[in-house]
Image 1 (cartoon, rainbow, N blue to C red):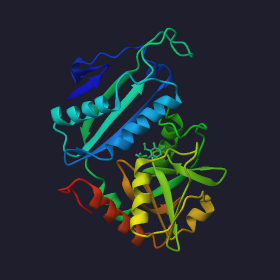
Image 2 (tube, rainbow, N blue to C red):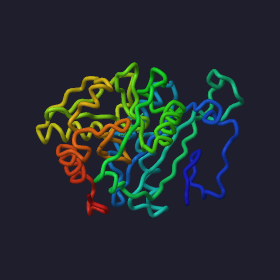
Image 3 (spheres, rainbow, N blue to C red):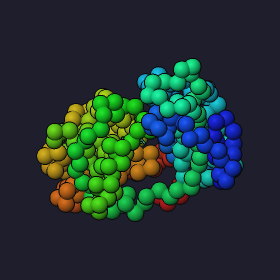
Length: 284
Ligand code: PMP
């Protein structure tokens, strides 16, 4: 397996990582996960734009251009022969003896990236999954795709211990998003989701799905809803780069709608699949 680290392509067993990397000490960095379908990166421009936007929000300069990083991602897919899977890329504020403030003088940010083969979660996409509600204890800059993921890690673990693959997060009963996904409810044919703000990550898949709603003439209301309202939805689903459009059939053990994948959710999944670079592997 070939990785990209600190400007070089390197074999995994030859990787050298600095103990002083601020990623270790502080989670001081940002990252992206980009899906590969049939040898092609999906919505790559959007992901790289968000990577640079996240870096700017933490006042960090990425020592490569967007095009250079796109070339790195494409090279990783090629040399590792990844057809369907994803790219992981992170940028940390660099390597420097531990001080909370930024290194002074500044050091170069470190880009690390790899590519892995991964199947689409087709079974869950057909059958739907259950989620568990968890208090959203994260910080107030969830719009930054930061490496600091402890709030999400704890939420995901709590859900997992309840037998659920995802947590539905809420602040004082108001649903924000998932631990690594955006949440959507459907009531009387209208799709509801939390508006873009500092309280959620502006998901790339969220955007794709909202565009699909427009194409399919499904009305959308970008307004926060409560957990109590979530239980009353006819359909529910979440989105992310790896989960795509994932039906939610139960929240906290209570069935949503008829407890099966909803009709509009399926319609959105089909429209999403049609957007993926073909030929489709593992179509649903
Ligand atoms: N919210 C959070 C907190 C996430 O971590 C993610 C996935 N990284 C998402 C939403 C979904 O974003 P995307 O569709 O860009 O994968």
